Image (cartoon, rainbow, N blue to C red; front, side, top):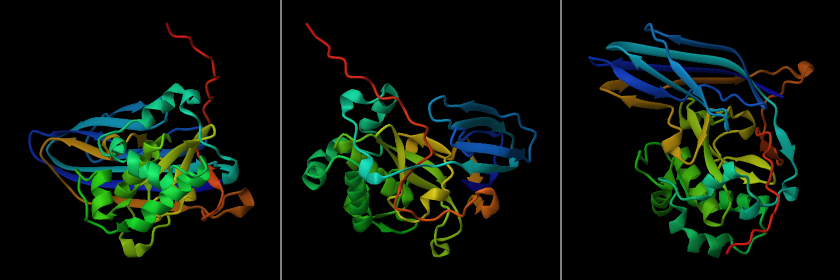
Length: 300
């Protein structure tokens, strides 16, 4: 088991008459990700509304804040119970057997224009064995061709832009990998968390975007930017691309400061709590989704 002590501090200056916010900063509630000792503190008297997605466990918080300074602190203790699998045993699932809730992650989306990359993806990856090894080949292909560099992309940068520019940050790596997976009919989605294990040379701790790919009967973690240690990723939100998982969406005149992130692993081997490490096994914090049985259907 991995235990992460997580804290997120956000600071805003809000102009009159105030602003509305939608935040995705809570650790997701899932059977394999247990959230405890949770607290949420505001510098203003605020009563937020929090919605939990029934499929992903992601939590969305909506609130209104008045003019002036808004400080938000979210802290939690999060226990990660990873499902560990032999990559050689993980095959892709034919579209006809995919669960209904997975199908939406096959389609092109705003930042992942998989329909524009089909010919290239088939040329590069179409001949490979259809399983974990092919997804790993896509991840490695992205990692070899794109250079991680801060402040090289913006809110309009898409997978196609990253393919052309060959530079970006974690979300750009994620978008390109997702688009290439979908282009060869592999369900893929973006996940957000924190960049546990990132080299300090890249800057202070931050939010992190990575990829989950559906193989066998569950979603498995991939980190195309290679900047963190996946075993230490606390999942916050999941979606089709970054448009679905922004940590803050703001409606009003607001000035923000860089988020302050703290994610520390508890080293307590006597109680089964380990420090995250890079491993060769496939990791998932998903509990698995039942595949559909094949039932022939006659049309006409």
